[in-house]
Length: 248
Ligand SMILES: Nc1ncnc2c1ncn2[C@@H]1O[C@H](COP(=O)(O)OP(=O)(O)OP(=O)(O)O)[C@@H](O)[C@H]1O
Ligand SMILES: [Mg+2]
Image (cartoon, rainbow, N blue to C red; front, side, top):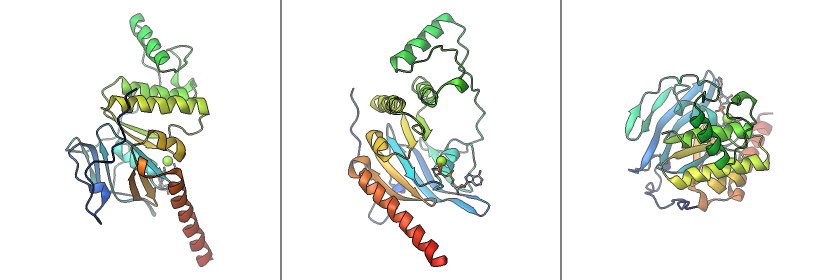
């Protein structure tokens, strides 16, 4: 498999400037100054993020850091309070997404069934029937189908919110392989939220860390480690503990 090297060689921001605002002609997606509040809760503060063509960007962070909120804004499920989203150089005004039917598309045509079966088999997704209702599938099979759909559609940006959550080793391996396949094709860009740093560093080209609604860390995956990411999160817990004790 010809997996493109994680690219840490792209244009870098000037020292002291915001890495999320690095100018790069190959960005498929750019998020500029996105903020979001839910009443008294500030979920996102002035988020700048960019995603290059064919890149797998891992979005990491503690519970409640704002990861899912950011992805929901990107897919149009929730409007941001401020900021803009630029897709392929064009600013987008995302309308709310149409609810997707949860049934596997009706494959009445025999040839289509055969093709679906073959592709799912190729990808190692063991389904008893291609007519199975998605609601009845395991978490791993569902995630695999969502990714398969992206591979065989024209989707250029894939947003995955914890695709490895609550998954056994075998299922997680399948999903990681599918993401690697996407990456090897080079035309689909991926943002993936995950809590397991070891797994994420296997597939990611770059890592962004969200802490309390802010992106505090932006590095090529090859320049960071599980150790470094753990240390940052432990430091965050220590600060939270100290704050608790001070205000107690
Ligand atoms: N619809 C909502 N209404 C009110 N508050 C919300 C809503 N959605 C998210 N929040 C709050 O915004 C903050 C960020 O939540 P978000 O779900 O984005 O976190 P997360 O990083 O995805 O966390 P986790 O890792 O636990 O999934 C949290 O404080 C959460 O309680
Ligand atoms: Mg979440």
